[in-house]
Length: 235
Image (cartoon, rainbow, N blue to C red):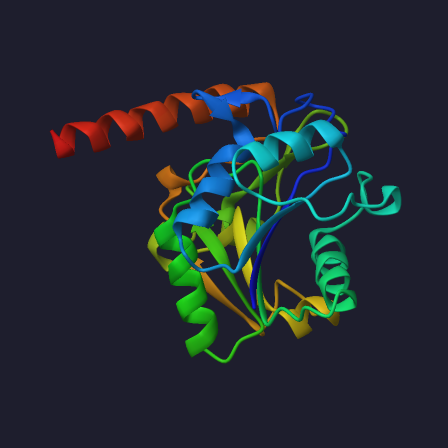
């Protein structure tokens, strides 16, 4: 069995109700649900939530909500792995045993069914525990600076002050879209960001963290521009 789990708790503080807030004509979570279903990768697409209203919206767009997530797994400090582990354990207790499980973030409107399918293919072919979306930083992380307590500037890696950009190692970060994993990896809470994972490289313009209202506005502008471009190419 292949399972998609979309975590969507109700307690978002910086953008209230962001998982079901309208984004370009649909509740935000709908984009993730539809991409999962369109990928044809899953026997079941579920939303793990502690919130009745989120569950109702998820059901409207075709996802199932077989349980309400317990409160101890719905606070600001609960990590992704623990949430997915809970879902896998719930199915195991019902006598249904997932083999591959994909965590898809509810606030990832740029996710595509093609990327999800690509992730499954890599997971099955690469002998890894996980595979997930990453993207590159748009500026060399070795040149990062910090603001000191006395409001001055200090480099995090001063040894690279004069290193040419082309000589610096390119760095990547989690694109925050999806994580494919073996069910046993989730159950054993194996490390996501480690040697057991294989990356799926996503172009920077197809990713957007949405943590603040400013992020949200930027994401909507980018999403609309991408939709407009896609429409022009097919006209």
